[in-house]
Image 1 (cartoon, rainbow, N blue to C red):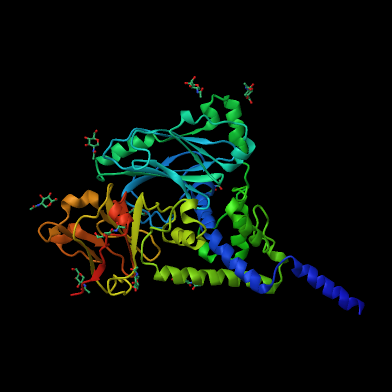
Image 2: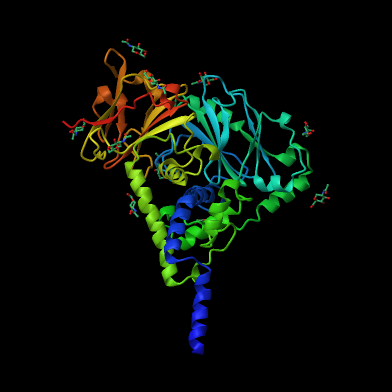
Length: 470
Ligand SMILES: *[C@@H]1O[C@H](CO)[C@@H](O)[C@H](O)[C@H]1NC(C)=O
Ligand SMILES: *[C@@H]1O[C@H](CO)[C@@H](O)[C@H](O)[C@H]1NC(C)=O
Ligand SMILES: *[C@@H]1O[C@H](CO)[C@@H](O)[C@H](O)[C@H]1NC(C)=O
Ligand SMILES: *[C@@H]1O[C@H](CO)[C@@H](O)[C@H](O)[C@H]1NC(C)=O
Ligand SMILES: *[C@@H]1O[C@H](CO)[C@@H](O)[C@H](O)[C@H]1NC(C)=O
Ligand SMILES: *[C@@H]1O[C@H](CO)[C@@H](O)[C@H](O)[C@H]1NC(C)=O
Ligand SMILES: *[C@@H]1O[C@H](CO)[C@@H](O)[C@H](O)[C@H]1NC(C)=O
Ligand SMILES: *[C@@H]1O[C@H](CO)[C@@H](O)[C@H](O)[C@H]1NC(C)=O
Ligand SMILES: *[C@@H]1O[C@H](CO)[C@@H](O)[C@H](O)[C@H]1NC(C)=O
Ligand SMILES: *[C@@H]1O[C@H](CO)[C@@H](O)[C@H](O)[C@H]1NC(C)=O
C-alpha cells in the first residue's frame, strides 16, 4: 500500500510541471513556428557579430561595409540580392540608444536602411522612399534602456526620426544602389564611408572612461555558441528551445498582445531567460517536443510548397504582420530580412507556367516582360539554387537588372524583353539576356524595388517562367 502511494505521488510530481503529451505537442509546434525566425536571426547575428568564423563581419555597433556585390561564396544569408552594396551593423541597445548618421546621397541613387528587430519585424526605414536622400541623424532606442530611463526625455528635435525597438538587438541593413560594376563601386564606397554609428552617450560628450565602461559591460553577455553547419530547421527541441529562451529575454517586457501566448509557452518551459530543462523530461515528453516540431515543419513545408505568390504579406512591422507567426516564419525561410512591400516586392518562382518545378538540368526557360516592370527605383531577376544561394557560372552573372536595360535585346517593336533562364548560353546574340542557371532545380526571384501603386494593389501581372525546350 504505502510504496504504491509514494510512487503515485512521485509520478504526479514528475509530470505536474508539464501538460499532457498532446498539449506538449501542440504548444511545441506553436512555439517552433513562433520562434523559428528569432533563432534563425540569432544564427546570423552569431555568424556576423559574435562567433569566430569565416563569415564574421565585426563587433556590435560597428558598421561593416561590403565593397563588392555578393557571390556564391556568401552563404550565410539566404536569397541575397546582387543589385545593391550591403552595409550592416548589429546594434546592441541594452545600455544606450544608438545614433545612425547618414550622408546626403545624390537624388538618382536609391538607398535604404532597414531596421529589423530580433523577431525579424521591421521597425522602419531610413532612405530614398521614406526619409529622402538628404541624410541626417536617426536614433534607435531599445526596451531595456527605456525601462531603466523612464525619466530621460529624448530631445527628438536633434534627430530626423526616432525608432523604438521591442528588442535590445537590432540589425540595420543598408542597401546602396550601384549603377555598374566598374567605376561606380568607388562612388558607392564613398557613400558607405559616411554611414556612421555613434553611441548616444558619446553624442552627449560623456568622458572616454564612461564610454569604455559601457563598452566593457556590453561584452558581458554569455552568448551560446551556434554551430553554423546546422540549419535551424535541423535543430533538436533541446537546442532550439534553449536558444529561444535565451533570446526572448532581450525583449522584455513581453508585448501586451502576447502575454497570453507566453503564458501558454511557459507551460512547456519556453520562457524568457530560462534554461530549457530538457533532461528532466521523460522520454515520452521529450518525444512529444520533437513531434511538435515535426508537425510544425510539415505545416511549413505544405504552406511553402503552395506558396508561389509573392512577398507582399511576409515582411513588415509588428503591426502589419499582426499575429500571423506562420507568415513571419515563411518570410524568414524564403528570405530573412526581406523588405516590406512598399520598399520592395519579391516574386519567387519554383514552378513554371505549366505548374512543373523549374528544372534547369533538363529544360530551358524564358521570362518575358511585355513592358519594363513598374518601379520607382529598379527591378532585377536573380538565380538561386535549391538552397537559395547564388549560383556559380561561366560569366559570373547572378542576376539581370535594370542597370543592364540598355544592353538587353528587345523584341515586339522594341518593347518587350525576354530573359533566357538556362544552363548554357543561348548564343552570342542573345547572351546579354541570359540568366545562367545551375544544373538542377532552381529558384528564380523577381524583385521590384519601390514598386508603383499598380503592383501594390494587385493590378500588375507578373510574367511567368515558360519552358522552351527545342
Ligand atoms: C578562430 O578560429 C581559427 C580557425 O578555426 C583558430 O585558428 C583561432 O584560434 C580561433 N580564434 C579564437 C580567438 O578562438
Ligand atoms: C570563391 O572563393 C574561392 C576560394 O576562395 C575563389 O577561388 C573564388 O574565386 C570565389 N568566387 C567568387 C565568385 O568570388
Ligand atoms: C561616379 O563618380 C565619377 C566621379 O565623380 C563620375 O564621373 C561617374 O559618373 C560616377 N558614376 C556614376 C554611375 O554615377
Ligand atoms: C559634444 O562636443 C562636441 C565638440 O566639443 C560639440 O560639437 C557637440 O555639440 C557636443 N554635443 C552635445 C550633444 O552637446
Ligand atoms: C580614466 O581612467 C584612467 C585609467 O583607468 C584613470 O587613470 C583616469 O583618472 C580616469 N579619468 C577620469 C576622468 O576618470
Ligand atoms: C520539408 O521539406 C524539406 C525540403 O523540401 C525536406 O528536406 C524536409 O524533410 C521536409 N520536412 C518535413 C518534416 O516534411
Ligand atoms: C501557385 O502554383 C500552383 C501550382 O503550380 C498553382 O496551381 C496556383 O494557381 C498558383 N497560385 C498562384 C496564386 O499563382
Ligand atoms: C529601343 O528602346 C531603347 C530603350 O527605350 C532605346 O534606347 C533604343 O534606342 C530603342 N531602339 C530602337 C531601334 O528604337
Ligand atoms: C485594377 O484595375 C481595374 C481595371 O483598370 C480597376 O477597375 C481597379 O479599380 C483596379 N484595382 C485597384 C485596387 O486599383
Ligand atoms: C537549351 O539551350 C541550349 C543552348 O541554346 C541548347 O544547346 C539545348 O539543347 C537546350 N536544351 C533544351 C532541352 O532545349
